[in-house]
Length: 258
Image (tube, rainbow, N blue to C red):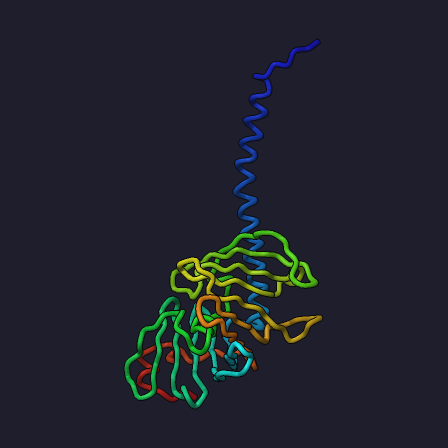
């Protein structure tokens, strides 16, 4: 009987360990790349495609009994490079604007020549914050991992765990469920900086069988009033705004925009 000589296996074990050490970062990089691609696909459903957009937005807040509490209209210009401008269209807020440049947010009031700094969690209406309205990009704002497969109603879905890539975001962590095939966003858990669950979000589409774009986001509060806020994207079109519109000093001096 031949007696095994364990020291002969050592080079093979060392080679296997070295190969494993090389493959692990490569696998992690591939997984990160997959998540980034999934987020880009989910963003296309939210934006309808394109970096520079004009989105006509309607926000409705419903009381606990289901009755309509408030309703507002906004024109949102989302621009490349983490820039957005929100024009408030309803009579109760006429002339007000919110400007987002990266992590910096300003509120501009009619009759005032001074832009006021605000945070992305500042409420616009109900549970819709400035960040909810002004940003449409998860791929640029978050890094993530694939947490596993799940079932969302009658369809298979993927669960992603996302971490904020920057401090100036409304949510520091998001648990996101997307369709397994098209990667359309289905629902999300939105966590604030203290890692408390702030809101639940669900997404409605233009078509149940062949969705192309998100036409509604429903936000349910989990911290306070437990009201429901519906953000409806009434119309989208490609539009790049003049560069001066993205300057808080210009907006303060020029309240009327064409």
